[in-house]
Image (cartoon, rainbow, N blue to C red; front, side, top):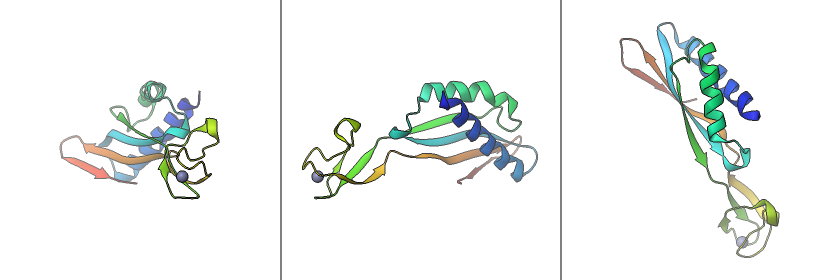
Amino acid sequence: MHELSIAQNILSMVNSRVEKEGIQLEATAVTVMIGEFRNVDPESLEFAFDAMKPSFEFCRNCLLKIISVKAEGICTKSMHSFHPEKQNGFSCPICNSAIKEFKSGEELDIVRIIISTIDQGRLECTK
Ligand SMILES: [Zn+2]
C-alpha cells in the first residue's frame, strides 16, 4: 500500500516546513495534487494521513485536501488533446497516432500549506 509512504512523505515535508517558520505555529491544511496515473486511492491516502499525523508535532490538526488531476495527452500527428488509456497504448482515439506527451496525470505535488498561529491570522505559502 504505497499510500502509507506518500502520506508519510507529505507529513514530514509539511512538518519540516512549519518547523522552519518558527514556534507557536502549526499546519492546519495541506493541499495535494495527484495525477490519475499515480494510482493513488484518495480514501486510503486520507486514512493513512489521519492515522499518522498525531506523530508529527506540527501536523496534529492538519487537514488533507486532495485535488485529483485527470490525465491528458497530446498526439503526435495532429496535436489532439485526449484522455490517454493504457488499453490502446495511449494512442489518440481521434486519429490513432501515438502520444507525443502527457500534459497531466503524473502529478504528486504539495500545492499549498496553510500555517496558522494560535492567536494571529493565517499564513499561506506555496512550495
Ligand atoms: Zn490525434
